[in-house]
Image (tube, rainbow, N blue to C red; front, side, top):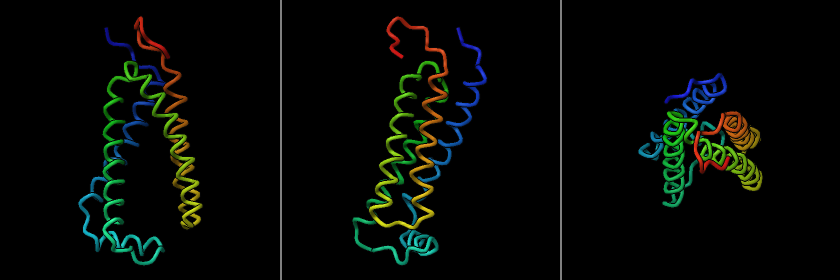
Length: 146
C-alpha cells in the first residue's frame, strides 16, 4: 500500500532531484574538449589548465562520479521510505565529503571563493539530506534498523 507523501517527503524528493539534476549536468565535462576545460579554468582565474594526461583523467573521472551520484539521488527519490537507510548514509557521507573537500581546497591553495563554496555547500547538502531523511517515518519492515 503506497504511503501518502508528507511535507518532509515532498521537500526531500524535490531537493534530491534538484541536486541530482545538477550532478547529472557533470556528464558534459566527461566528453568536453580539453580546449573548453582550459577556457573555463582560465575564466575561473586559475590560469592555464595543465595538459598532462592525469589532469584530464581526474577532471573527467570526477565529473563522471558527480553524474553517477546525481543519478543515484534521482533513483532513491522515487521511494524515500524504502531507501531511508541509504539516504541517511548518503547524508552523513556527503557531510564528511564536504569537510574533506574544504581541507583539500585549503591545502591546494584554491581561490577563496572556491574554498568558501565547494566544501561548505556539500556539507550543507549532506545536512539537509540527513536531517530530512531522519524525519521520514521508517519503512514498515521487521528488519528496518533506522
